[in-house]
Length: 288
Image (tube, rainbow, N blue to C red; front, side, top):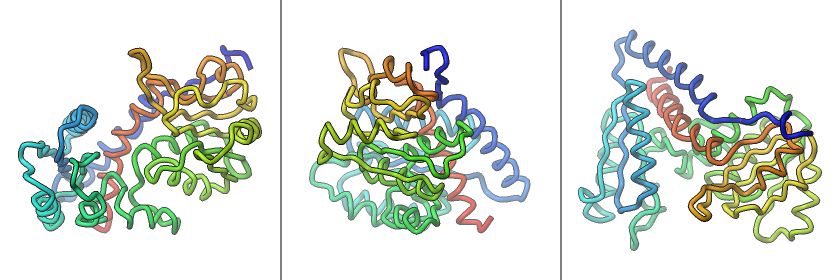
């Protein structure tokens, strides 16, 4: 396919539709006399990417009319204090809890996550959240995986019987995407650091859907893309001051039917999917 025919999957377009639905849901909650959904974001350690991400959450919450509170690093004394705050939030009317990662050195992430009420886990990282995805009873899905899946669905192409390759198998992207595609009866293959370059090339060339989430710039060559494929590039790595993905974008655009740009593809949708999780958590907690 020529580059002119490729369709860009831009997250902000789908995000707009989802945010409108969130506003409708909020109006319904308030009309019923229910409290406004609220998000508590807790940041224990200084990290520029966490600052940015929580800042985006705050902006989104304000635009959507949702309550938001940000506990910043200086207010969290140690792991015990963090766990105390999480448990207090779990017992409070707060709808959703977000815990910024990575945690400071010396903190045990498993202990911290297990302190959270799974019904308030808007990041979808509690073992119970991931377990429900495996059981095909998903409630709260990791937002980046959720965004990648929504972008695939947005193409309108029937997914049943398609072949997909997922490059990268993290618990918050690769593995949840594999489960979500499996629910749609897509045949999935997951590649990781143990996959040889030769096998990776063969698998990508035979795949109708490519989800690249390895965080390794240019790993997926454009010439490998099957003509007419859907390409979702989750990778974002800064190279010489520019954000680049895992896929060779220009060359892949010559062959794919749909492709996400980097930046501008999955990223803009991620915060919206976190807000969608907040609404889903609210419905779960209020039996709606």
